[in-house]
Every structure is written in structure tokens, then in C-alpha cells.
Picture (cartoon, rainbow over the protein chains, first blue to last red):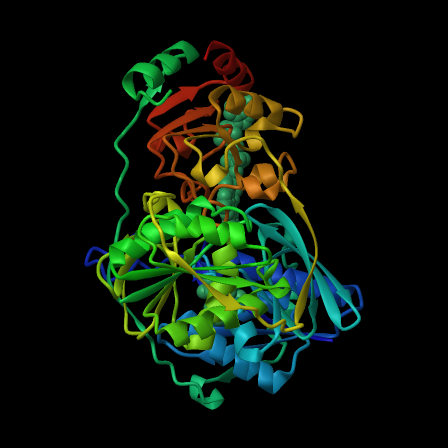
Length: 249
Length: 311
Ligand SMILES: Cc1cc2nc3c(=O)[nH]c(=O)nc-3n(C[C@H](O)[C@H](O)[C@H](O)COP(=O)(O)OP(=O)(O)OC[C@H]3O[C@@H](n4cnc5c(N)ncnc54)[C@H](O)[C@@H]3O)c2cc1C
Ligand SMILES: Nc1ncnc2c1ncn2[C@@H]1O[C@H](COP(=O)(O)O)[C@@H](O)[C@H]1O
């Protein structure tokens, strides 16, 4: 059983994102970058399946600039066996990422693709669903529990109304939600070992995919700031303000 | 222009998020068709036909559509878009919409827009990125425009006053790729989190699921919905469907009370458009105070019960 895990390099979730003064995008110079947290959860799940003897091989794949090598090394330090970098300096929209991933799936024939439900930069929440459709595979999005069975996966999903369990035929796509697992920290020996694991670099054209973006970002702005508030000394004042000033109760 | 809105419903009634999605469709401007797909969904189809501004309701009633399985729903939607010549396809930005709409986009070879919060023109929309830390204005060159709509950004259209015709699309086919096994839905007497007028949320500071009753008591006194931070959900104080934030639910009530929540960027992403924000936290440096209209620096175990009692 082979598992493919797509990992995206994004601005670290702890960084306060700043909009560029010319409104063309957000500052990425000298900003800490990390693996998308949902993708860390995906790698962790794959590694646990391997440790449980259910999976034999984990391939991490990233689409983006050469620095994504670091992201792939992180994935390998957590436990992926090898990495594929599809190198491009262009912005790659989710549909194109999905097309590239489909080509990787066609080449590598994994049994399962586990990926993040959402990249915390574009907040698209699209790629996994698109990939499943392009492949004609089943999908289970927003997974909080995965149990592999013979020829299928039983997946519990986090929905707005509670939890739902689906059975999907393998091969399939699973996208991770926060409660699926708590990713481990890579140990120093594993970080060292990761440096020696195989990594291939490819280009989108190697996969016959032309990156044709459909979206034009006209501008990027700061959200409207909230007016400053006040500190109230006690509960009675709070109630008074809510009743008589804000008039919300 | 012809706009297709995919309704979120429970077979009997239409969910509020659908009404906000139709409001976004009205801003785009054009003939609005609502698709109600489900099993035994005649009630929902009838309800949809009453919605203000809707000209046609399409009903697809089939066992294969009973649990919104994306593999069954997406081809039906894509075929409908093609046969009706729709130029826009909209669905609520809930787990329902997010689950299947990208599959529709893939079938139509369209780059979807997620969670639009503003309509600038028929092809230009505003949407939050980086957990709402920036707002992008995006123009799409796709002939068919597919998008999910953030419900809190659009005022609901009226659920009544319309008189659309209901057209039966017939059945749908089962892909056989996935099947429904079971569900554990949260049942609550409280208002729905995403459309409640008042929300009381608890965070890690609350400390245990037992003590979360303090939050629930305050919510009940105010007729409010209960929310939570990720830390409170991860710690098992309350179930996942209460999480407010970048990767949980987005709420924008008249009044949001954050109790024992520090105010991480990811939490703020889900609540900072609330009209009035109250924060109760014992740490006066907590970032939540930067977005609060009224901040109370206090121990929540004193302040929250006192608030419940005195209200
Ligand atoms: C990929 C990703 C997605 C995420 N998505 C979300 C999301 O959707 N929603 C979300 O909320 N978070 C999300 N997070 C997590 C977020 O970064 C924070 O970790 C989380 O919001 C913290 O929750 P908290 O404020 O309850 O806990 P803490 O940050 O630990 O804060 C607890 C607060 O309680 C206060 N407190 C403690 N005891 C008391 C007391 N007795 N009385 C009064 N105050 C007290 C403390 O002063 C502190 O400010 C996400 C993180 C990642 C990486
Ligand atoms: N450039 C990329 N490289 C690798 N994986 C990606 C990339 N973009 C998106 N993904 C995967 O798709 C998931 C969802 O991303 P998105 O649809 O952009 O929110 C991410 O969590 C990743 O697993």
C-alpha cells in the first residue's frame, strides 16, 4: 500500500501577515515559511499507517519554488520515504495543482492520497476534491478518523452539524481535519536521515501540464480595522454598557 | 445571465446559509434557479419556491442524493449547469458547499472561488485570504463562474414572498465510490451557531467539559448559541461543530462573548466581523482585547456565573 501526500509551503501560521503597501499581495520577504499545518497532519497519518503495517511507502510531493525542498525534507523527517518537487516560480491555482497531482498519481499509482483540507494561505479548500474528480476516485474530506479495510476506507468526517462516517472504495482521496492526529516533532536523527532520502525535481511540463491561471488578483487590502474598545471594571458595568450603550441585550 | 444556486437543506426546509447565498446571487444580477437535491426533498423544494427572487426551482429526488455524497451530487450539478446554460454557480461556504463544489469545478474545468464576501461585478469578487488577514479582489476569466459564499457577508433574502415554479429533474446515478455509514449529529435546543444573534464561546481557559456548563448557562440566559476555540474542541470540552475560526465556522452575530479565549489569529478569523465583541480573560495582555468592544479582565469562574445571574 502506497500513500501519496501533497505538501504545500506556506507562511507559518504564527506569522502576522502584512499586506504590501502597493496592494499587490502580502509580504513574503524574510517571512518564516512552514509546511501547511493540515499537510503535517496528513504526513503524520500516513506515517502512522506505515508504522501500523498497513502502508509500505510514503511519497511526499510539493508544487512551488525550489525552497519547497525544505518542506519535502520536513515531510521526510516526519517519515515520508521520498519526495517529488514540481518546481515552478509561478502561482499555481488549485485546479492546476490538482492536474499536476493527477499526473503524479498516474505515474506513481498510490493507493491513497492523504492531503490537507485547506491551505492556510489561499484558504481555498478545493485541491483534494478536484483531484478526486479528475481521477474518478471517491473522496472523504475533513477527516477526523481513518480506518483502512480491505478495498475501502472508513472515514469519519467533521461536518457543520457534527460527525459523519463514510465508506469509500480505495484508491481514494482523504483530506485531513484538525482532530485526525497530533503531528510529532521530527527528531534530530530523523532530520539527518531525511537529508539522504531520494528527492526528484520535475517541472510542470514534464507532466504535460500547462499552468494557465484563471484568476487575476486586482488588489489585496487590509481588512477593515475594528474601532478601539474599552475595558470595563466589573460585571455590572459590562451589563450596563451592553444594555444602554451597545443596545445588544 | 443565469445563476444556479445549490440549496443546503434538510429535505423539509432550506438552511439560512442558502438565503445568504441567494442574496449574493441577487447582487450578481440575473435569473436565479435553485437546485434542491436530496431524497424525499419535496418539502424543501416547495420551501425554495417561496424564497424571494427565485424564478425556478429544480428538484432532484433520488436515494443516491440522500447524504450529499460529492461523487453523486457533483455530476448532477455539472450536467444541470451545462443543460441550462448557467453562467454562475453558487453554493453556501459550509462543509456542504466546500465538500462537493470543487468537484463541480473540476468537471467544468473551472478555477473556483472560495468564500466570496463581496460582489464587485459579474466576474470580480472579494474574498478573504490568510484567515481574513487580507482581502483579495479577484477577477476570473472562466466563462462559468463557480463559487462558495460566506453566509455572514450577505444579508439573507426573505424566505417567503416568491412563487417559483418547481421542475422535476428526475433521478441521479450512484457512482458506487462512496457510501454513507452513519452520523452523530449534534442535537441542541439552542440557536444555530452560524445564524445566531448572540454567541457565547469558551476556550482553553474554561478548563474542562464539566466547567463548560458555565458557558452553556450564560448562553441559555441570553438565548445564545455556544461556540468554542480550537483548543476547547481539541481538549474535548465540546464537540467539533462548535469550533469558530479560520478552519471552523465563521460567525458574525450582534453580540459575541469570548470567555477564556486568547484571541489567536485563527480564532479571530471566525468572529471579528461580529457587531459587538465582549472578552472575558484574566490576562490583560491577551490579544482578544484588541478586537473587543468591551473587555473585562477577570477570572472567568467569577465573572461568567455573575453575568449569568445578573442578566
Ligand atoms: C491550521 C490551524 C488552524 C486553526 N484553526 C483554528 C480555528 O478555526 N479556531 C480556533 O479557535 N483556533 C484555531 N487554531 C488554533 C489557534 O492557533 C489557537 O491555538 C487557539 O485558538 C487557542 O485557543 P484558546 O484561546 O482557547 O487557548 P489559549 O490560547 O491557551 O488561551 C486560553 C486563554 O484563557 C485565559 N484563561 C485561562 N484561565 C482563565 C480564567 N480562569 N479566567 C479567565 N481567563 C482565563 C488565558 O489567559 C488565555 O488567554 C488553529 C491553528 C492551526 C495551526
Ligand atoms: N502547491 C502545492 N503543493 C503541494 N500540495 C498542495 C499545493 N497546493 C495545495 N496542495 C494540497 O492541497 C491541499 C488543499 O489546498 P487548497 O485547496 O489550496 O486549500 C493542501 O493542504 C495540500 O495538501
